[in-house]
Length: 316
Image (cartoon, rainbow, N blue to C red; front, side):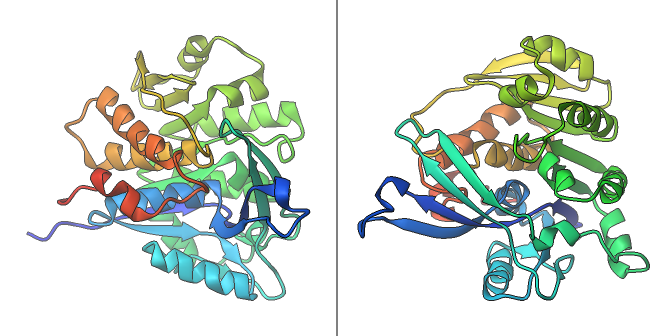
């Protein structure tokens, strides 16, 4: 019997990424790279690379009608992301961000996204065939950035659409310049947590959003018998796996660039969770972290697929 190919949707904003050593930008020696990146896009790419035998991975967003948007769509297809849910909007453009990375691999971001086409990804969908495509999926993944680039009415629509998937996953990915109202941010997190099956959060996000310092208490408070919470700290992960609370240490490596560290972890964990039914939660976390260790050794959000061949299964 032929195996059923499942459907995954990753929703959010893909942006133009500028990275490199900005300290030499005032001279002719500057070496700047242009690429594409974005939290849910990064996760979609890594998930697709790990799951393309079992899933069709869709990326849901909106792009413009410029050359960068044209190349972005080609990049989606190159990464085996289905583009049938991508809207094209006239006279709009993708957002842009720059990354400056210090010697420790820590990053400083600047963003230009006020006119981003992705902000209109949920507009004019009434009566569209894409509505049914959005509701009918095995996995739906989005983030706090996906919600906060949208108008309030579309935030609620995205949460509702995501909640209809067989498995809904979410990472808040807090950004100070985007989540400007702390009370609204807390309320949004609490609301979304009630409708997701898998909730990813970093320790820094927990501190920034809630000001709490006890990670285990936070996980216990938000844990349910029917959900998964993974809270990432520096050298360990605290988890709630369908009510089972635990903690696992993860091996550390020297980072060249921590961009997409969390995004790659999320994409890999979702691949492990949806495909590796015989793995323990600890094994799934360690396998996801092994991809993160590979990603942070290189510049930019997306590493060449050749650098992760040892993590890709030869058989589905």
